[in-house]
Image 1: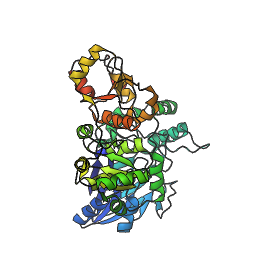
Image 2 (image 1 turned 60 degrees about the horizontal axis):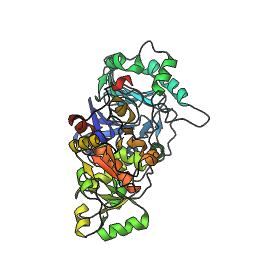
Image 3 (image 1 turned 90 degrees about the vertical axis):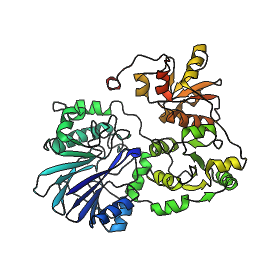
Image 4 (image 1 turned 90 degrees about the horizontal axis):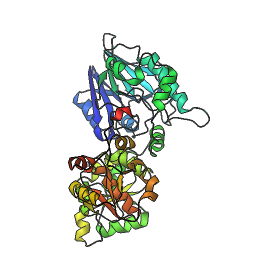
Length: 468
């Protein structure tokens, strides 16, 4: 038996490859399926099942493409109603895989079809659970994504989740390994651990949601408390995962369309496409196409695209470092953004060489920021999350979280102001959005809050985030 976690950091997502005696199961695959095909070929094994823990909201799974490529059936838990052929498992239905067995445990709560897959070894001993978004490390799945108008509330779903955890998961032995679908950084939970594998026994000890003496009412209140609105693209990803989607090879073929600077500008004007610049923030600050949006490929790229652009059908034109076009399109497709229609051939250097108009972002070092603050007058806008801001912030700073920046546009003044985040990535995204809205009197603080503290700028008293 071989169990491998295939973790994708930028999505905080775990897919799983399970092989036994020449037969393979894949759980929650990413959209680009070639790595799974190659891995099975390396083992001289056949992919027998494709298990989905639920209809994912934060990424587009590769189940449809992988099933077409292998002939392996897609397996969902009870209550699932996909538009394509699939096995809808019954609770506790067993699936033989080589010398081992995978058992579907229906665990509704995050969604009504949510299912945890229990792996039993060749001796019949419970070995691991693949818990999807039912149980995370340090947290549980949010219960507000699958509400049906007039039928289920988030409290109803939280109640189902409580029962699922107590009746299906907590009775399992402490030495069972927990393999969740997500880790820290995912919007599918509130406060996940940075680790991606743990034992169930340890989770029973430290996960607030698994307290042995916890009542259902306490569970519901604690799970719902502090939930932020989900990103707008989530329902669109659920729809794609439930109804199917375009093959990624077709998406890549359409997106890898090289455009000269003149053609790039013409296509942008004709289609209303968003110009998405994925280079490093420092390069964007020194020069970029006017009104383009910066979301750097080397940060939490795909989730920020989903949260801020939201509409997966929005046409996109790309400015990348030469050679990273295909990578960008692939990572966009992971969250359902399939409508890339071309990229700037030769990158931003080609735009400058063609003497096309370009813009810059004014910036300042933390030491320079300190000097300016001592003179007074200029407002400060902190675009970190509210929890980060409440934990510690520049005295007098306003909190305008990047996730909800569009809700704060009226708050930015006509006079010069400063923008910062934790390290410089999010503040440059914010700066690009503000400039695209015609707000140009901003100054980005390089290095963010990290450099601000090191410069000795006065900040509020530290409050541990876990107490907020």
